[in-house]
Image 1: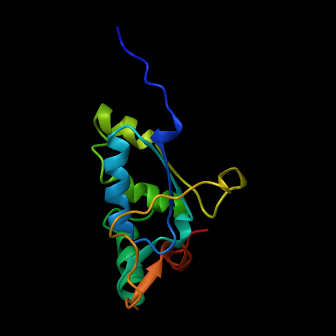
Image 2: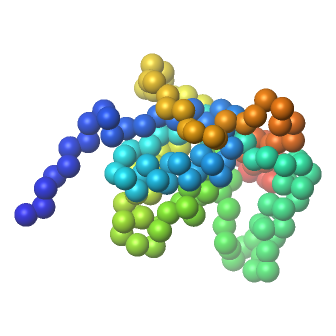
Length: 149
């Protein structure tokens, strides 16, 4: 018989995405979700992409206007929380049952909702943007530049 696993408070992780680098954050979240933990990322619009702003914006505009065109796909999210969620999805084996279940355990939010006002955040190792790093762009700014909400 299958055992029912109870979700306790220990199985829920809250991460503040403010000034965290997207790729490093995504790998950490994917690993934790594969281990069976529920992950909530708050302030997803403040997650950072490193590099020159003009290069990042032009690269994503070119991806959107790819060979098939903007009406046939692949479709890119127009909200910053869904953009971060898509990046995490690509770090998971989402076409298999294990990865699909892990992806369902991941939630992203723009800002901090009232129900998460008093939670304790987990620090993601090596994901914080270094203070001397000057070339970066937040996901929220990227979405505005590319044409999202």
